Image 1 (cartoon, helix red, strand yellow):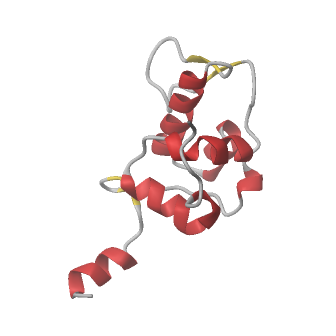
Image 2 (cartoon, rainbow, N blue to C red):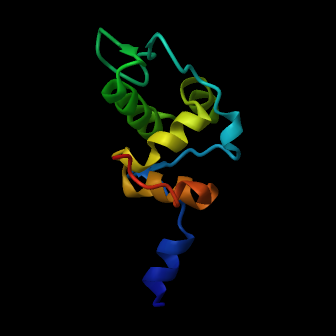
Length: 117
């Protein structure tokens, strides 16, 4: 392993350049909504219509991707994500590499998930 590889391994995972990925310490902390229509706060989604019907699998997946990318605090993650739902959706989420790596390092059980067919 050369010096650059060691620095990259020791660096905090990035959600995007200049922003660290936020990860909760225990998936059981994630007790967000599991049904109905929810409205994301403007800080997480900047459109006038921020309502998301959680019964729609595509919208649910989009909500999880958005919250994982945009959350700045564990409280935001705990408010909007649900642990078992995150585990179920994880293989199909399109996420920046830094976010995926940070979550999988903290929660190795996410690495073993296979995409839904």
